[in-house]
Image 1 (spheres, rainbow, N blue to C red):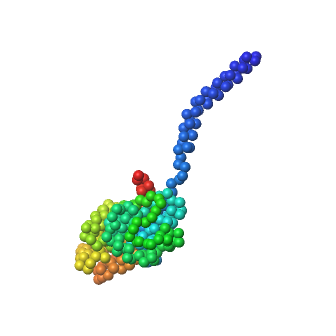
Image 2: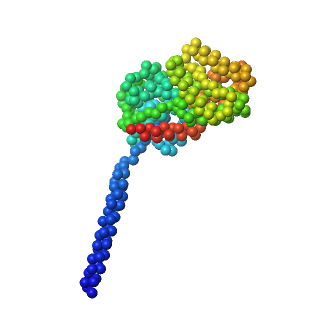
Image 3: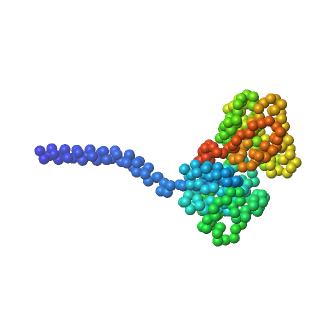
Length: 329
């Protein structure tokens, strides 16, 4: 009897041992997955760059930041490569414990000396663009176009300030492209056209942008606008979709030529008995649209009541840009 009980106990021990041995790979695999989890969670901060303007213009950008802020820590730096505001925003993000910063330019085009100057200030470009000195003169400590708070803990508070040297930062910084020819822009422009459309097949849409000064850079703007309008054509039935830049900041001969081209497009459409829809390629209305109206004085057209903003798709684009940046090593 005792011998039988002994062998039963021995069999039970053997079975338990065999089960334990069989389970070891599974337990080991589970244990490995736990210990390979990152010990410190990556925390990406978003540096939202925007030109800035009147209060209503800035409020639109702040609304975008609020939406992005639901997923990432975010700070806005208003201005044209305004170092004070950029540095202050970086300081605030670092104070929130971010482990990296992604700068997203809320600008119509990457083809701009404002963008290249900002790249230099962020340490992403070796040589300073010539226009940086011009932008620096616009900064008188008040934040330029759309001020941001200058907190006392800023890294510039205890030393002489030079607006033309790169900012200081403790975490890696990357920078994404501006809106450029992103399909989101084409979709929003099409929505704006649709908001004033009555009979698409008898309407001609003219997409108009501010544009740069130099002819070479203007060609790059027009290339992106061509892509945008191609995207609009593929999703609509308008009689035609044209595009141009008015080049507001260019010398008068160039600006005058742009105005003449603009008027010619509208006059041609009027002669064809087509209804003209003017769709400004602007981030937000803030005065430039009034210049458009002055240029077309006396002509027959309808202009949209809003620019790209407000629109939830812009905040979604910012988030996609941030995530795209995170995937690049």
